[in-house]
Each structure stands twice: as structure tokens, then as C-alpha cells.
Amino acid sequence: MEEKIKEIAKILLNSRYAIALTGAGVSTESGIPDFRGPDGLWIKNPELERKEYEIYEKFLLDPRGYWIDVMEERRIFGGIENAMPNPSHYALAELEKMNIIKYIITQNIDNLHQKAGSKNVIDFHGNISRLRCIKCGNVYDIKEFDIQRILNEGKVPSCKKCSFPLKLDVVYFNEPIPRDVYKKALSEVIECDVMIVAGTSAEVYPAAEFPRIAKNKSNPAKIIEINAEETSLTREGISDYFIKGKTGKILPQIVDEIKKMK
Ligand code: APR
Image (cartoon, rainbow, N blue to C red; front, side):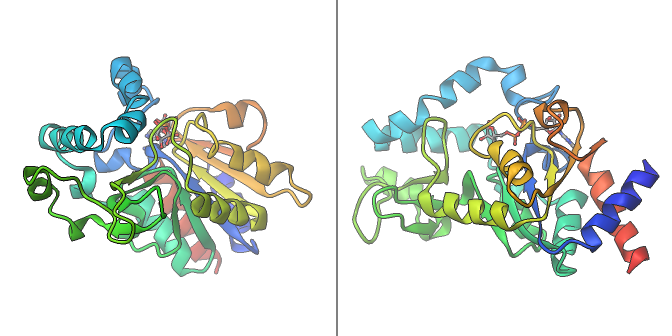
């Protein structure tokens, strides 16, 4: 393991344009459950996953009903907005400060990379602290809206530019990734020469395609996978390096090794 950490540290130190793709696994050590790991939400509660496939259509057909559900869910489950970053997030933020990680593409909606200090973050599946207008593309800080008061007045949060009902800026199943977000992420994948893939089962597309695109482009990138268990990326040989373990332990070790080498 130590040898592999050293090798990976050297690759990152010598990289021209390294990026990271992260998933729910980097936030489990912040107390947010993942989806498909051994204790994953969908594994433990398949019914919950099935319901997730209905939310986007509900928003399109009944925005008020959608918002009532959102507020109810927040009241029952509490918001992930109170969660705090863990060493996984801080390590990636430090790699950005060292100008090694140029961008993070995250599938997480929890805003924890930003809370840890990362500046260049693409929220590929959205961000819980924002609202989005799917008609004109405008995005708002959720704090701009007193949602419960708006609902009590019999209305729904609406776009200040085009008045279309707003939704949480999270991408639900069956909902397309916003074009600007997809284009930005793809351009980073095309540009990178090294990609850290951390804490993702790599089963949800289009994000799961990114390591494959990076690996199979004319100037292939080196794929460094860090996960608690093997994934399709490991099994298909997409990953050039695979470290099995917790990202909150391994990513800081890589940072420490880089510091020793500098
Ligand atoms: N360190 C390393 N790996 C971890 C850790 C940890 N601390 N905790 C969990 N894992 C691993 C799990 O074993 C699993 O393989 O992280 C992976 C998380 O995979 P998923 O739960 O499938 O999460 P993710 O890949 O981000 O899911 C993609 O699916 O449900 C949708 O929109 C949701 O963005 C999400 C998308």
C-alpha cells in the first residue's frame, strides 16, 4: 500500500492537469449515507429508490405538491446542509491549493467540497443550497426564498426572471443534466491527464462514463481509483491504480506523501 501511495503521489506531482471525480463515498465519513455501498440508502430501502424515479415528473405535473414533499422530507430527515466536511474533502481542497487538482466533478449535492475550501467544483448532480429554473436556466441561492412562507401563501418559489416554478438544484432520476454543467464537466475530462475517482460505485450515467472517456481518449489519462470496494472500473481495467479503503484515510496520506516529495 505504501509503495502504491508513493507512486500515486509522484504521478500527481508530475501531472499537467489532474482532476477528481467524487461520489457519495467521500461523504459517508461526514455522516451522510451513500446509496449502493453495504449500508447504502437504496440497498437498505429499495422502495425509497423507486420513489426517487417519480420526483421529477411530480415537479413537472404538480410543482406545489413537489415542494410540499420537499419540505416534509426536510422536516422528517433534516437537511444534509448541516453536515461538515471530512478529511477526504480537506485533502482534495489542499491538492487544489497546491495547484495539483484543477477541478472536482462531484456527483454529491451536499456542498461539502466547497465548505472544505475547494473553489473549482462542478456540481454534476446539482447542489442542495441552490434552486434552479429549468426553463431559463437561472440558479438562485436557496436563502433568497422563504419557501415555507411562500407555500403558506398558496404559491410556489418562482423564477425572478421568467416566473417559471423553481425546483431544488438537484438532478433527479429521469432528469437531464443541465447542458452548461455537462459541457463544463466534459471539457475538464477531455483536458485531464490524471483523474482521481473517489468514493463512487461508477454505476450512474453519464458521470460513470467520464473515467472511460478519460481512459480511452487519444492521449489517455491515468485513472486512480480509491474506493471501499471494487467497482466496474476496477473489474474492466479502466483504473490504472486501485486502492481499497476509506477516502478519509487514503487521500490525506497521498497529500502527506506529496508534501514529502516537494
Ligand atoms: N471511502 C471510500 N469508499 C466509500 C466510503 C469511504 N468512506 N464510503 C462508501 N464508499 C463506497 C461504497 O462502497 C460505494 O462503492 O463509495 C461508493 C458509493 O457509491 P454510490 O452509493 O453508488 O454513490 P455514487 O456513485 O455517488 O452514486 C451516484 O447515484 O443515487 C444516485 O444521484 C445519486 O449522485 C448519486 C449517484
